[in-house]
Amino acid sequence: MVVAIFGDCLTVYHTHVITEAEGKGYARQLLDAMVACVRENKLWAMPLCPCVRAQFKHNPDAYADIWKRYS
Image (cartoon, rainbow, N blue to C red):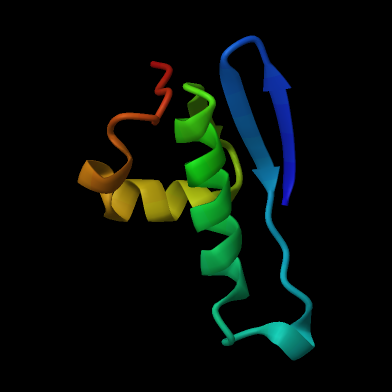
């Protein structure tokens, strides 16, 4: 997972799991760890990574407290 923190916002740029590890839940573990870190440190998350953004969009209630949305 490629992230950057600027001020109180953690931006997720890219998430990648190698082919051999696909389907084993590692992407979910990365997402869960990132979300826990954001919450623990009272940050916002800005998901620019298409995979993370899709999870945020499909489960808006689960991430409403940390999702930094820009119009």
